[in-house]
Amino acid sequence: MEKRAPRLQFTKEEQTDPVLKESVRRVQKAAAKADRAQTKIPKKKVLCKQRAFDKPAGKTKVRLYFEEADKKKPSKLTHAVRDAPGNAVLMRFHREIRQSEDENVGVEAAHKSEETAETGGRLVRSAHRSHKLKPYRESAKAEKRLDHANLGYLQKKAARDNPQPSGNPFAHWRQKRAVKKQYAAAKRAGQFTGSAGKAAKNTAKAGKTAARESRRAAAFVGRHRNSFLIVAGVFLVLVLLLNVLSSSSVLLEGALSGVTASTYPSTDDAMLGAETAYSQKETDLQNEIDHYQEQHPGYDEYHYTLDKIGHDPYVLVSILTAWHGGEWTLDEVRDMLSTLFSKEYQLTQTVETETRYRTETDTVTDPDGTTHTETRQVPYTYTVCDVKLHNEDLSHLPVSIMNEDQLGVYSMYMSTLGNRPDLFPTSAYPSASTVKKPTEYDIPPEEMTDARFAAIMTEAQKYIGYPYVWGGSSPKTSFDCSGYVSWVINHSGWSVGRLSAQDLCDICTSVSPADAKPGDLVFFEHTYDTDGVSHVGIYVGNGMMLAAGDPIGYSSLNTSYWQSHFYMFGRLQNP
Image (tube, rainbow, N blue to C red; front, side, top):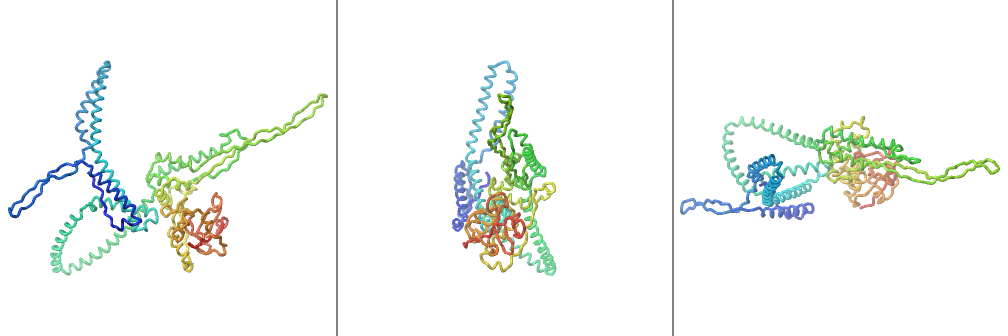
């Protein structure tokens, strides 16, 4: 049988801890189900011996008794091995019959009936064995669910005791993986399941042996004192060197595992193939628009309102990798490419009709032979075809199709571009992202004396360098502009929930640029195709703001871009 999942024991503090309470409940519930499933496994009587020394008689006596034990799980090969010779003979027999019965329909019918009966017998035996295995299967499932619940609790406890790693997606993933590996190792070693007594005995025995050997060693060292002083000095130098190397290896391992986790795992052929396939769809779309009138004839006039066609290839590959949870092939993502394309691009047409009039002239001859012309207005239907192409922007799609964990992985890949800046060089892929470092800015110390502003910046500066993720609203998923500002103020004394840029503007009091001070919010409009406020940042003084750009970082408000889109400064009411 497989090794049982450990039965964790919880303190009263852990059972009432708001962070752990739900995980503890799940573990206890899963453990109860696993124990019930274990009791349903068939038992058998096993004859056991117990030896005891009878001092008065001076003899060793043996007591026999029966003890219940789990029956051994039936082998998967039991019936197959038992029936294999017979089955082989029967199959050969039926083949020989078929070779000689082509002209005898009666023999054929009898043979079919016989073969069906034999097959039925095998199915009955198989069903009987399946029924006997049911309690073992149910117990294995219950133990697996208990393992899952145990891991959930241990990971939650690790996140509570060490909250710092949850500040970014990779650290959160690495912490969960470390807990999983420790749990598996402890389970294999039996550290959760009653091996403490044996370990204590082994420790005591090892202690006695060590004490005896240490006395011998002390006497030997006393006789060779000078030599051992030299050896000890060399040993200390080696220990120091090894300690430095060990620390370096841990750091190197962490760095390498970080690089590995944030690197695209798929082959270049797969990733470049996916980009080519998606670009071909865009080429076909552009071709349809270029020849729209030829492919959709019959209208008097065509009007076009078209968004630009194009996408960021790194966004495409990051979406595919996060969605598939790792490596993928081109064939595996073809359907996903079609789905993404249909969500990004919507080509529609609207036909409007109107009644127009044209002037027609007729030549008329009077009865007296005089000829003159007459004009009249003739109505006709005029059709106008309005063609519209909407590009949703590929980077806007992850938040609508992914869960929080997938979105976190997507943001990790976008922060590093999969550690493949060479994959899509901007010379060949003009829309490809490049890794950008946030702009450095030192806030004057006197500004930080304001407790309100200091609280905001303490939280806001934690996420400098995080990538811009449309719809993102937490450190795990990264942020967009309004998600970032909402998170910061909600963790700096306010409680406003997740608000859009316009909603944040609505809860602020307008402040003139001359009266703006650090900690105020600054709003912009028409930074993309939307009505109202479209972007928000945190003003830090001296014409600088901290906002979710690409990536989160400082920006100067004095550039022509921000000046052309500036809307207003806003001040939050005291929390």
